[in-house]
Length: 251
Image (tube, rainbow, N blue to C red; front, side):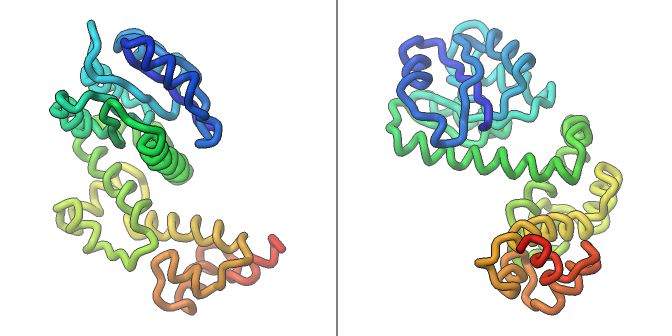
């Protein structure tokens, strides 16, 4: 279960979200709630939730101020913003602080589930990323330009590892030269971009190999390799086993 804190200064909205939504079916458990930004910040610091669902228009510390402090303190929490339509400018500002998505009040159950499914997927991706790059590296680095660039590269690779993604594609996406990008990423993470891309692909390949319904060529294609034989060579070099030998361990 992923943990979540709900923040809204309107008791009826906060209580409705808490009591009338079956969060467990989404894999979420509410671990805290708050009626304003200052109270919410304390909850974030103490409870370290995976997800924050917050209103933006609140007395005292508003939602945007809360999100800004959360990002400055580098809390690894995914944020969903609640706002009335007439306050859409607040939503645009929140997205600049890497809020994952937003919900415009009033919203229905389907809209809520669609947004939360997206957020749950992002949290799971972040946890997979953390297996390769220590969280403190990303958290500390996120406060510098080089750290933010590295985070963007990591997120881009996790989002598009299944494509025929080249190093030039990544450099183009973040608007840097290949050499500059490679230098920054190596300095911040200790990995080359190529090595990190391979790590992510191999991690997902292992996950798919444990499912016998996938053919080897489907796994190759699903991890960005057009040639199944080349995929097998890369996999053996990375893991010490051929894809078939790795699969046989799980049968």
